Amino acid sequence: MMIRRSLLIFVLFFATAQVCLAANVPMNISATVLSKSICRFVTKTATLDFGNLDPTSPSDVVVNATLTLRCQGSANPATYLITDDDGLYETGVDGNRMQHATIPGNFLPYAVTYTPATATIPKNINQSLTITGTLLGADYATAISGVYNDTVTLTIAP
Image (tube, rainbow, N blue to C red; front, side):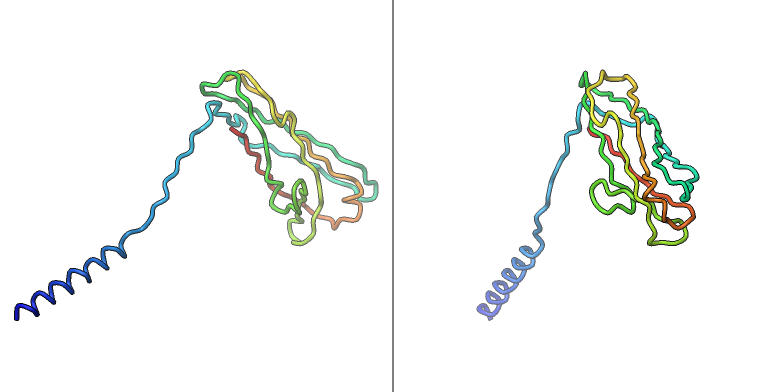
């Protein structure tokens, strides 16, 4: 009887030990130290409207919009960098294109630039960012009529 109890206790101990081992999992720990510059857009939206385009008399169209940004924090001066995601219908890096609003699969390519894309500025001073959109006449000369649109997201770092 004593041997059975000892064997039962021994088996229970090792069965419990196996269950405890199965409960261990690794945990990833990370942290991100933010930049001292803390740059943000003051203006939250901008629109590049190419207007009404006449395909019978196509010419290049250039439009502009302005955003305002400001860098705060302890770094003075602060350096920022602007990047973008090339829009919802991109074909690759800098491959911006608008999609027809009612006929999916029809696109109109365009280009977007912004100036200055990077700069070093005093903290707490507003900085203007000029966004320029260019649509080539050759690109809309044979386009299907209708409304085309896209959404581009700009990111400021740091």
